[in-house]
Amino acid sequence: MLELHDLVKHYQAGDSGLIKAVDGVSLTVAGGELAVLYGPSGSGKTTLLNLIAGLSAPDRGHILVDGRDVLAMTRKQADAYRLHQLGIISAPHDLTPGARVLTSASLKLVLGRKRKTNTTLIPMLDRLGLGSRLADNTESLSMGERQRVTIAMVLAAQPKLVLADEPTGNLDSVRTREVFALLREVCKEWGATVLLASHDPEAASFADQRLELRDGQIAEYTSVSLGDERC
Image 1 (cartoon, rainbow, N blue to C red):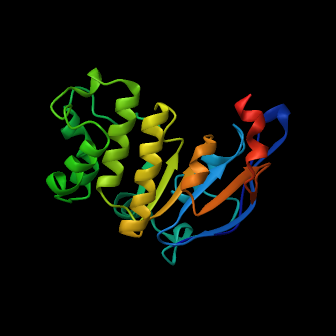
Image 2 (cartoon, helix red, strand yellow):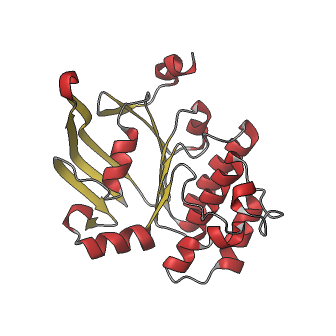
Image 3 (cartoon, helix red, strand yellow):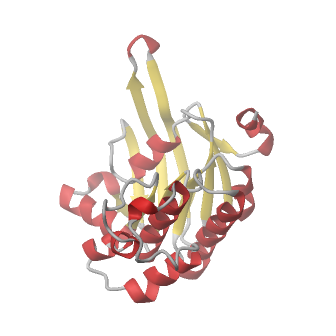
């Protein structure tokens, strides 16, 4: 489902010199698999996810999603790819100010012209502990609740590929495990592909692949290598 071949993205950072955020990354994540991507802050995880999403262009390499070359897409095709095939879970900044929870969470379904509010969105919000907050204003939610609304909004559209950038950063340990379990179910029940960037070592127990991005390159994840992040 997701294939990266020799992907490179370098930045010139003034006096700091050349930053090799992504430096020859190749990986494959099949349909129905959850891959967890670890790495210290600034290691290039977000840069890699943005490349896959088509939000920035690499210096070289290839990105294939379901056999399609993301880099060869026209702007219209790229917009359709992000709307219909891709789900991006990041910081909860996409909630509509002043809107009710259910209305705000319906945004991606409305834009994608998918009528799944009752069949997928409401059960997803309920699964994430927000069933009693559907009529509440989004501005009354805590950061953790906003994060869960964002997760529900993305997953209710049933994307084929989910890119999750620290989706549990605002959640407690119980909710964190629930989200990891939900992402695992999305893979197994819908056949989705999930690439999860995280600092949480516990995510590894839910993953089919455990990877680490360090100095712009992919290596097999070992729990010992994250010891410096937990200090």
